[in-house]
Length: 509
Image (cartoon, rainbow, N blue to C red):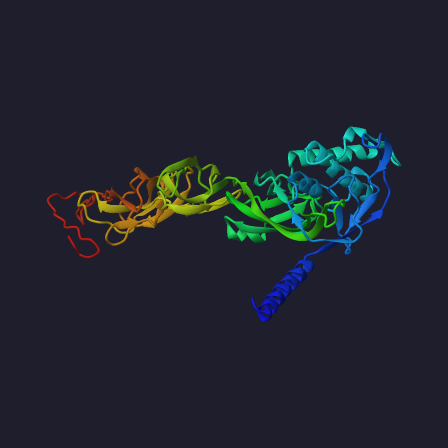
């Protein structure tokens, strides 16, 4: 190979190597350590004595938290960690539960104490998982604080790691809820925005509804009964649906931003120093839209207002309520003008009158919509049966019609005269429309020169628009004419054999 070619090859290799080093440097993480309080002591089997343990805290220049993965190794002093290695799932789980994702306040300890417990839990887990020599939990002793203050925390974290039990990042529970009636609403049980991390201002909204119109009237209230749509971690809310809503469901959407830890593990760049884990905390958008609140709408009722066309409230009308398939759903009978169908499922129905009260006609069917927890009103009016009475007045002997006869029509029940009618030239007198009932017809004035007929007629109006005819005859008034014929000159002389002709006023003999 010529010197020129060899030079070019070396130059190329150098440039590639320089490029790789430059890019590796971009992903390098500088990790440092600083001394801090050792809260507990440790009975070391290696040193054969009790010593403070965990007296360093590890961090990146931007103060991101780091954890040591090798007990007994030297602390980092500003080295660049470039080689990423896989992180054991148990350690990752401990970091999810540990500091800085959580601050220890739930345990009543400081944030630094919680960070300290997280580090010791990692070492104890490594021992019990067979990853490294780690530490033995039973060898921990009181230090600057009692062992009883921190040991439960360490045990909690180690057990989480051994069981690979991840925290709850964001859940809405329960996810399927049946709301029940409370006063004027269907109300859900408490729905909790559950998380093992703290977050604020999670937004809860109605995503969809089986009845789109409900979205504007459904209320979301906190446990104090105040209406609001933003909640913090582990707060609960309840959903309020108006009581008149028909059977249905709504979908709840909950959104939160949760700061979650993400761990990276690095191998030491210097022999004898510690491998390290770097913890990044980053906000993660969380969304749960699988929460369903359902309810069974209350049944409704139908009230029929039943009147006659005379305005009277009617008793005894019988009705059948039919569904859209023509099936009988319920029956009812009116009392004082009202008939009620109770406990009827919301839907469309038709009311059929199957029997009218006496004296009235069955009316046409009426459509009605039954709504949840509502009383639907249907008004139905029956036509009263009406008819006429017609009297034909004739001469008893000749059958000729007679004018001028007057008759009273009397209500048989009350005895009240409801109408008086008089015959015309055709001998007929016709009443107006009379309602369904029994009547008595009685002549009150005979035609001129006729004898009043005292006969009474009982008449019943039972069919609509029927005309009942009565023929009423009268006998003419008759008398005798006696003529005594005497002699005009001889007193007391009666004469026989004289004949006479009688004429009326019209000179008719």
